[in-house]
Amino acid sequence: MLVYASLLLSAALIAAVPSPPVVQVREPKVTLPFVGRLNVTGRTVAEIDRARAASHLARASAQPNQSGKRQSLDATNQAVDYIAEVGVGSPPTTYSLLIDTGSSNTWVGAGRAYVRTSTSQATGDLTEVTYGSGFFIGTEFFDTVTLAEDLVITNQGIGAAAISQGFDGVDGILGIGPTDLTEGTVDGISLIPTVTDSLFSQGTIPEKVVGVFFAPTTELSITNGELSFGTIDDTKATSDVVFTPITSTSPASEFFGIDQSITYGAAGENVLSTTAGIVDTGTTLLLIATDAFNTYTSLTGATIDNNIGLLSISSEGFSNLQSLFFNIGGTSFEFTPNAQLWPRALNTAIGGSANDIFLIVADLGSNSGEGFDFVNGMVFLERFYSVFDSANNQVGFATTAHTTDETN
Image 1: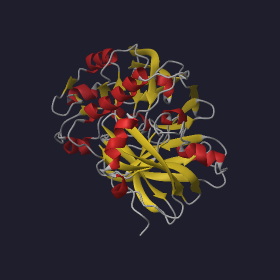
Image 2: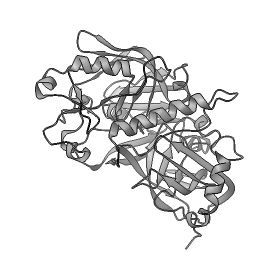
Image 3: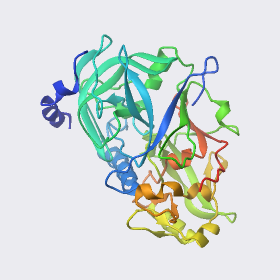
Image 4: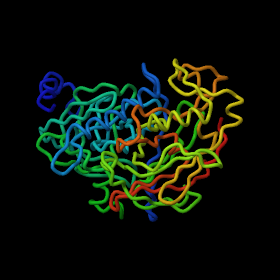
């Protein structure tokens, strides 16, 4: 793939790289606010998410290596993107980057081109990452990256895209997934430390931990989330954080993968038996294996709206809708009926009418037993504070003030 990429790159490289013209660290607190953004381009939300999940699974299965790690992958162009304003260079150029725990390369140039400054160090190495609905090809640099006033990284590996596809309206990706996901993405370099790795190695944060705080919204664009580094931000959680180890089941184990089961209602009707899947800020919906999705559809009485690609439910059906319960690490997390709805104020943005009621549980596209049977995407993370602990290979969850919000 990198050989093919080099042919595409040669014609565009000069134009793409112009010359110069919440986990909390207690004292001080270092956080990165970001914006939730609706961005549906050409396909339904569910189709985009399934493409992302299929990309994860296909690459993990098709490109094994001696260490058992994936060589490259990941996703983009989701219906709801969380973006952060990130500075690169000195003086910094500001880029709008998608926040992605499902990939680990940080790169710019999809929209605003990479601007070289006095801190730019060219490696001359080709870099390429393919996502579920897009890709980028470019060259790797080392440069200063500014996440916030107290979050400045020197000599961070960063891709400068010469060619990209599937990133309309943003400039690239801030990859905060497991470091091993960078393997094979840069020619001549084994692994690229993530921004979390670099913050830790440069002594800016005490632990390789990232906390993510999302909140439900009924607006097309609002700064209502926060990415924080170092330790747990107690101000965002209303319960203790419950940690669960990264699953040992491949290919989910190559991401921030966990084991969980899902039940429905007070009677505890089984939807998905204990199995492996991933937690992913870059996926919008809650994706579950096809057999589990069929069970959920039957329990709720919902039907697929073929135009929108989401489950649709009647007003009567919604009045009877019961909570889902995610059983993770010995704790049951309640996902209320309201949490299972697409924000009705945003129905028209995805082609629906104001009176429609859509559900955010969608079909993963494969039956359970694949070692990748669910994706807890942004709609799940909007209801729970999440902690991605790379040092201890675990993921944690806690309730927040928004866990039981009635936004629909």
